[in-house]
Image (cartoon, helix red, strand yellow):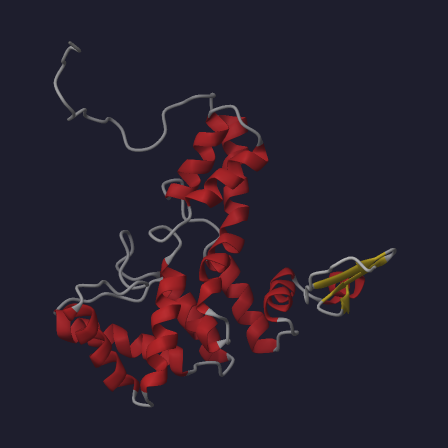
Length: 255
């Protein structure tokens, strides 16, 4: 009786054989960039010139953002506690969630849902802002705690435009930036997460892959921070915002 099997459409392996999405791994090694290979693995088909350029820009854009993001502090803290490199990187990745690294996914979800509501992106953007206001929600992918204008956003859109790759989701994202300023009375520029959310939506990626793009991009940065922490800093050092102030119950006794 044959054993039960489960199916995978990603990689086919056997003795002396590795084929990713049907392509020989040695041909991929020779002919595709890392960004192109990521596209192939996620999408199942080879990227065109535009998709290859955009995938490369996406993966480069979020490779690192300094020592203060939670994922970097997580990685460095795990190293400082005397743990291994793989544990440190895993710790940093586990810090990535809805409020750190999740805006790509959240923005892409909204753009993909609302882009289906018609052809007039300006009308859709205005209705979306009204919906956000009435539901007391913040639009993910807009505004930044550090940058008044995120330099990566303009460059990503420029690359998309250069390759004739500015579809409805990118147009809606840009229209939304104007609608937010008009209706809220303050400018909330598209940040890199919002730009990536729009671009991957036009590339046909499911919004549920959003955090994945951030993770793939950020891991090399986490590796660099982990190695720097190992080689430049003393173990068990103080990391994160300092000092802290206790505001719990006063001293008390049991019984």
